[in-house]
Image (cartoon, rainbow, N blue to C red; front, side):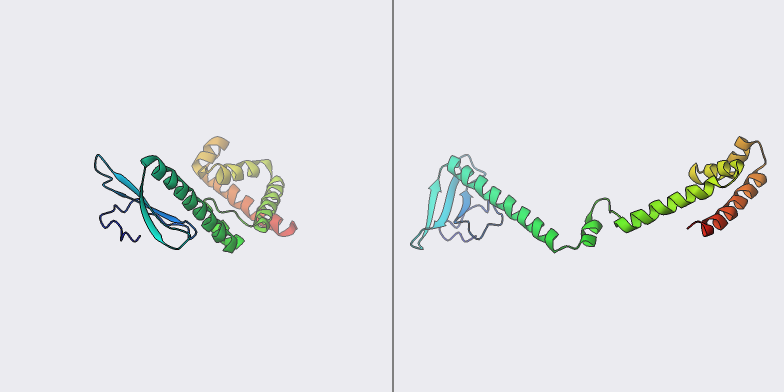
Length: 171
């Protein structure tokens, strides 16, 4: 901001301006009991003027300038989004979204896994669910199933081997 007219002007408000904004605002003595408000502009004959204005007019012009800044920020964000690819937008998201194909593949794999688990014996189904889905230890499973921990462990290992073979055969 060029304050040739008033060298002791306060640098307020200091913000970017739209190139089409015809005026600049500044104050003198903002921290005093009697601040002064100014607007600097170029008229239609390309002559520069600096005029003292009322606080009310200053605040009105300031609100217009703030609206311009808000609009410029919105335009900048829109331009950035236009230039970004879909993958870049997903990377910037607070909770990244997997591409649709990956979501479908995960859902398909889950369906296959549930189908394979349903082909196990009821004891193996229960123990697999407790171990992998309920995060229970072999000891906790053994206590629930009234068996020993090594027995629960062997049952889960056997169920896992069966699942691998079943999943190989499920398309």
